[in-house]
Image (cartoon, rainbow, N blue to C red; front, side, top):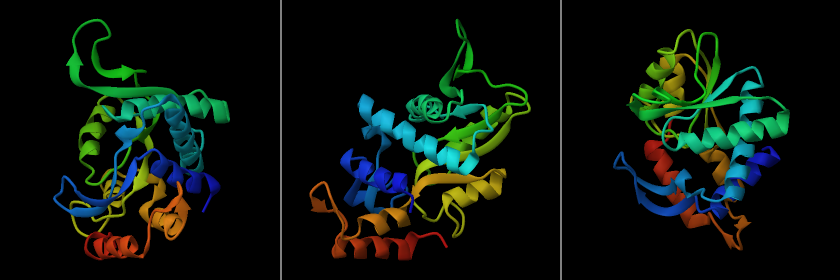
Length: 225
């Protein structure tokens, strides 16, 4: 596993973004872990987060794209932080764009915030985590309504590797199959467990034998094939 992925896993724990215990998800599933990207709240955290996203995007999609699109609301700071980091790390000027939940009819009117998107633009979609693919159902038509836009791919921070809405494939695999563009993540939950199991982080063992069993049991029921 690449060093930046190991650092990112520990960063999620340090920032209290990735938590372990017992959580009820929107789907009703009882999960032994939960991720909340809204817990990144400081300047230094956002700087580091943007760098991890930038590295993962560069690794998966290179530099041949024009716009980072972060769906409202959580995608807005992700897109901004990552566009800055991409320039700092690779010297490539990338525009950022997000959607508004409500169309603005005065001043900077329209549904888009930040850069406009137009014919021939190559776009990478950036999100925190995807469990059902519902946000893409809203995002995809918005992007396609802007003209002949190519979606290069999608990046999330954590691939939960759970069954999506239909069948045994993960949400990211369902997105790839339905929309025809690749979907990647900074890390997968498998990599998280591999790195943290019986390893000390922040002065304690994060995933001990009992928690490892709870995670294994969860994936035996909900894990994607």
